[in-house]
Image (cartoon, rainbow, N blue to C red; front, side, top):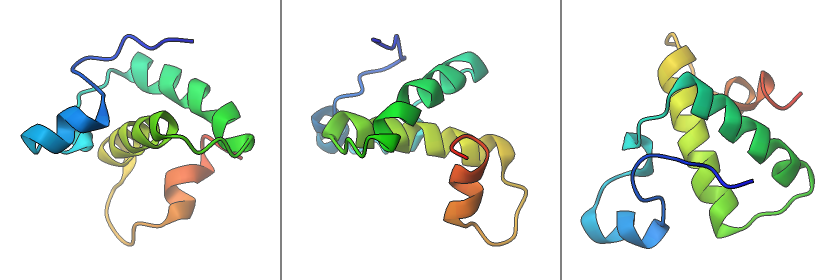
Length: 83
């Protein structure tokens, strides 16, 4: 399922220009779509460059939108989407 994400998402592009992956803006809809794409990849333990890039994009937006302070944990990052 191809994702129509804004900005280039090739890892090499970000390495060349220095932009962190977490600066790619995602709408609520794209964030949800990305989470739906990631869940089966993670459950199958398909750790590819694309999966890693998309996980960083998803997690950065999840943290930005939902983290209210305190200690940031992996449980917070993964609990709601990947039960």
